[in-house]
Length: 288
Image 1 (cartoon, rainbow, N blue to C red):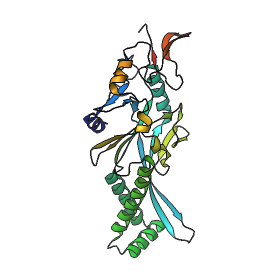
Image 2 (cartoon, rainbow, N blue to C red; image 1 turned 45 degrees about the vertical axis):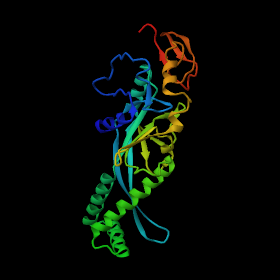
Image 3 (cartoon, rainbow, N blue to C red; image 1 turned 90 degrees about the horizontal axis):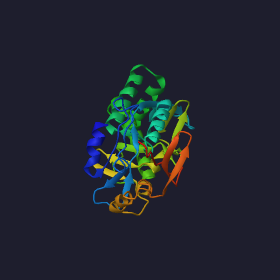
């Protein structure tokens, strides 16, 4: 995460509060406007802040099978897993402190992908796994490689490029590497964002299911040091950054979406809430 937040401020005003042991279970005093607004330098439209949770685990899996013509195959696949129970706790904390939601941040590294799968394939081969030996030796003969190591590297490269190619197509980032950080919203329109797999207590990102990447918010290309944001997701108000800041001068205008704030009374107390609820969850507690 340190690398990500060194790169992001290069062309984005990105105000983010880390959910970690240092800040967990504290009563934050949320700076109005500053914590929620993200403006592009010299940009015409604002984008908005989402909280960040970073409890991701990577799973590198070799999927083995046999094709219809009887040939054995191996596919290299990468999955990202998040602990659902932990995310639920952070979700509640984010909402209670006036934030807009949670981003799940993943990093895709070509070098890590290829090196990991090449090593795993060679380990399987050296253990005399019959399936792996047949696939690697056939790959060596068919492609006229000098060694089994080249077969293993070929499979890793092939599957990386296939996965990333589909991902870039879905997210309309054809001219970028696909490597780097992807900031993906946990929820879209109050529902789990399409493309996330919920399995027991896990939320899983499967790179084969590229639907999720249509909804990315920010992409940081670490190979080319380029930042791209999803204009369809982040910039829909039509206001300039200056217009958005001016709106916040009005105490009864929602600093997140521009809607009107109204007094909400509950058994637990009163607060100003956005009239666009549940699409917008902004609220301001007047007595705090």
